[in-house]
Image 1 (cartoon, rainbow, N blue to C red):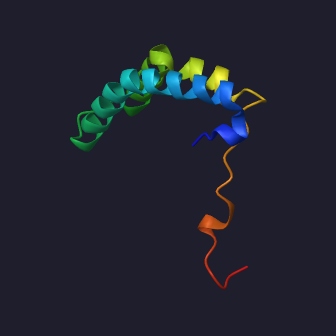
Image 2 (image 1 turned 90 degrees about the vertical axis):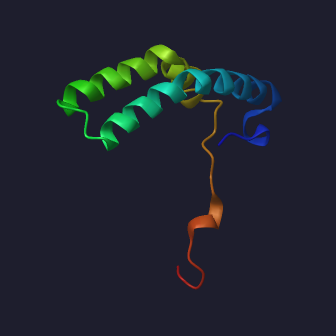
Length: 89
């Protein structure tokens, strides 16, 4: 998850806007693939997976990756000790 303190307010605002728009396009594609997989309706998984990824990229995922996740100004979120068990190193 992105935070304005990590990105700077301008990049964060752009991320929030672009992510909201892209999510609207990606969600139906993700839901469709998940439903097909859960119902056993995928006959050739390799072909379907490639098509699924192509659809995601065409719907805006490629732009999000380029603009944010591969952007050196986009610092990865660090969950800190959130996933460290207490009393364990």
